[in-house]
Length: 315
Ligand SMILES: [Zn+2]
Image (cartoon, rainbow, N blue to C red):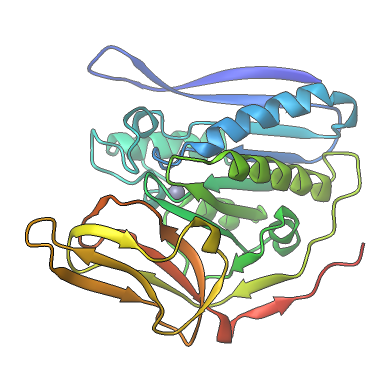
């Protein structure tokens, strides 16, 4: 097993600090090449730790690695430093500006480096995300690499009718690289069990691709969502959740109260958020007594009525 660390310079900041991409290459003989990245959104740090554990696992099991794994643990070091979704310096969401622009805004320059130095010559790409500082989430996108998406092992999968433009996945898929975008964990507390699952799911993708020379675990029965409601409040205030972290993935009846927003000043109830579909699957929620801003990501709810049940794979 050969492990190299490459620094790809992006620019020099006003502080004098150098902004660079740090890319690990773990090479274990001939075989496919898989890329794994995290912290495209800076407030989704769980995957950075999972990438660290993945590197350690591969180094410790080098005799079983048939191929190359390229790791970009922190795609946006500026947003990771400030624990924010966007780059604070230019108020930009890195995961909407791909392929980037070498002559553009700072975040666009960063995107261009990732496009040209990381999202190249890959046979598969795994893109880690989580819910961010407050929400927690649990699903995996299924797009151009269905067997790999299933191999991660999450119960809920989502095939979006109109995916976001300008993401790393947009570029990878335009290059015909099978891509798995993982959404798992968040809330920045009690994430250890999500980290454990994220590592195990990624190892199973590596088995499925043929990088790890051991049989993949067959995918369990899974639910493929085609329709997802994103719910954002119209009023800001104190959020009091009525569904909680252990409820993620659960089906609730339409009209079930998910959370209430109270005024921290008059204490009146400003808004009640309820499950929108007759059969609503809880995909993303908040489980903290924190203030919430109008328009924030609050719930993602899948429609169970239009979902497909994917039978378990044969073992
Ligand atoms: Zn994200």
